[in-house]
Image 1 (cartoon, rainbow, N blue to C red):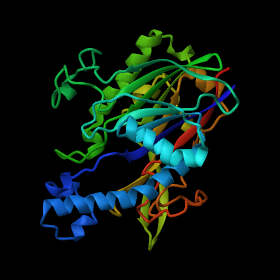
Image 2: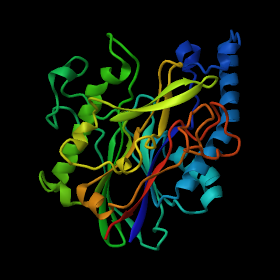
Image 3: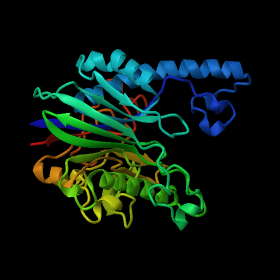
Image 4: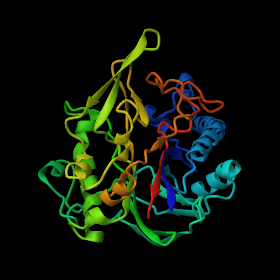
Length: 369
């Protein structure tokens, strides 16, 4: 029995307008910065018009990316709320795939912008196996002291009673064709901006490490410490960290070259260092594992994997020959592709926008037998 499991940061699937750019220029869209708007009411009208005009193309492209992934179960990040998910599924995704994703799950989490993790599911797999949800648990309220994870490094910015997850760890107990699968959906702390002489990734590493350790603790509490290796579980989502990257060197005019580089430390080492979970993306070539292009000018640009389907050792062993797919047709044209990886972009893709998302969907065929 096979199942297609996927994850996708759909990038700001919102139902509300963000007018904070009126007070904070750093939050203002770049197109409105070209105009001298002196009146707040006019600014809000322009922002609404901009967002409405941009959103239709964006969500058509998001739906195309999801349709190409063709997952039976799709974990999503950056979803505003259930009405947003329902409106997108009915108005866009339905036109691509029909009435496939009738099961939708979302619990409001901790994000200050209101973006949450969510799950779309078919009622049955493409091979006709029934997909049942037995239980759903949110861990958004879990605190550092509750899970015994508070330490001196975290004490610089947090209190023991602060919530661990910046969004949530949404846990779903599933039965698929009579076989059980536990799914943990996350969206870890973003890498943020540089401060105190540290780059953004290093400065926020302790938070993501604690989130990863919290997920591991939840899994171990669920199955029993020392018994997780034999269970069927997957940890999916945007983890905002990487263990390796492909450095992009050069420019569009001069041409690019690509060099793989291993990171000395990553928050995701919590999962991998002793084989607690397996990243099946490593079955792809080291140059071809990326799901996002990061750029801050020509001196800082790389390709990296931020989007993961971590498998339990039991699932990884059962699916030793299964390799994740990465859907890159929704990437903007500014994304440089290493030689041999070029794909046909979806219609109407722009240089930077519109695009399906800044992230690529990842999907994998999994056998639960």
